[in-house]
Image (tube, rainbow, N blue to C red; front, side, top):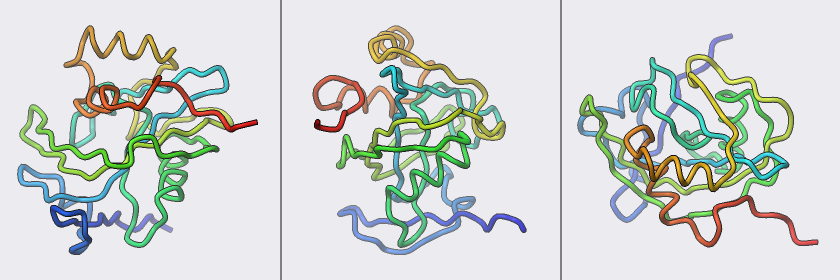
Amino acid sequence: MSESPETVVLLADDGSVVGTAPKATVHTTETPLHLAFSCHVFDDAGRVLVTRRALGKKTWPGVWTNSFCGHPAPGEDMAQAIVRRAERELGLTLVDVRVALPEFRYRAVDASGIVENEICPVFTARASGELSPAADEVAEWAWLDPAELRAAVAAAPFAFSPWIGWQLAAWPGDYAPETSAA
């Protein structure tokens, strides 16, 4: 059975839902505002997973970024969408999904003119199990100490997606996984 086409939730400037559209038709030079999410996955040692987007990706191909991003389906719970997308893109099971930047929003244009225009809450999660990325999504990956990631983004910002730099700049407190209170 084949996977059904992905649908994104279209938004008004105030964040209210105004409709839906097939994902394949949304990312253009005039991308409408839509709902998305971004996730930073940490391992038990406190390292963060960074991925290099596959070369076949429509937006920012070959660019290093946070662990993964995606779009919730219409009516889908955001945490469920994150778990679903982690399994599809990274072959990874997640636990402890938590919001870090609930109000994150951005618009960016890549070198080909394709626009990202998203209200995109940012989450953290902890990896459970082995990583097995899908080749059509991820070209390379690395587990980095959070300080190493900050230094890499500061040293070579054009090697990374613009949104990871903006997310790190807006991060509340230390860039590290949240831990459950004992």
